[in-house]
Length: 178
Image (cartoon, rainbow, N blue to C red; front, side, top):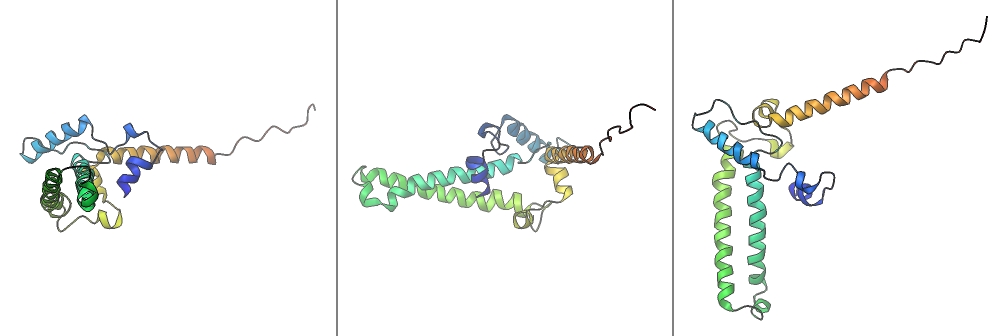
C-alpha cells in the first residue's frame, strides 16, 4: 500500500524523480553487490533509500499484480469473455495466469525470504517490516546515502532553529541630544 501511494498518488516529488523507480545506478549497484558476494570487492555499494533488491521486489509485485489481473479477469467473467475472444485465448490466459502464480510463489520463497528473513546477517528476520525501524548499523551498511541525507537535513533544521532562536538587536532608544 505504501509503495502504491508513494509511486502513484503522492505529488510532493515528481513521478520521474521518485527514489523507488529503477535507475541505471541500480544496475551498477547490482553488479558491485555481486562482486562483493564473490569476494572481488571489500565493501557493499553505497545505496540510498531503496536498494536494488528492494526495487526488484517492488517491480515483481507490480508486474505480478498486472499479469494476474489481466489474465484473471477474463477467467473470472468467462461467459462474458467468450463473447469477445475464442476459448483458445482463454486457455492461453489460464496458462499465463498459473505460470505467473508459480513464478510469484517461487520468488517469494527463494529471493524475498532470503533477502528479508534468512540472510545470515538478518537471521531470524529483520523486524523493520513490523515496526518500521531500522538499526543504525543496517542504515550504515545498506542505506549509507539515505543516512547522509538524513544527517544533512538534521543539520539544516538545527541551523535554521538556532538562527530563529537568536534574539534580534533591540533598536537604539536613547534620546536625541545631550
